[in-house]
Length: 137
Image (cartoon, rainbow, N blue to C red; front, top):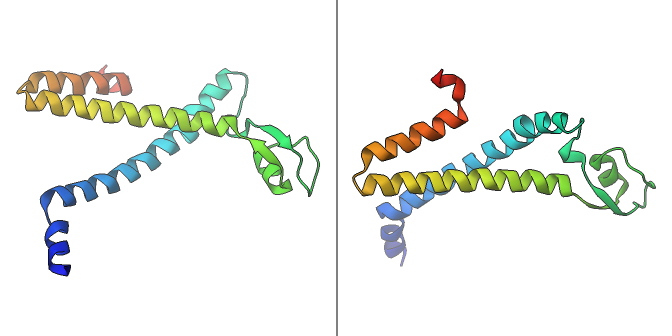
């Protein structure tokens, strides 16, 4: 049984999948940081100084201290029950970025498999130009 498991685990598809999962996890971490630390602060500033990570509704005051709370961290420290819609908004934006990256990768792979190498390169350049316009000036 151990020999069969070793043969299964050493197949190319399983190893490729393992590498993909590890890289996907790292990519998710990078996207989460990008959304929370780079994208949302300027967006919040444009919306009048809103901090998305501190957007919440107190459902029930905490046992340690009554509301209102200045931040989500204060509410959590007081033991309050909160609905964290700002954190959820960050998660939705992160998901959309990852979903677009997966879609883009799938489209590129499809074009490469169809022999449309020029189209795949064009798609890659288009996305790069949108993401990093200063590099194409």
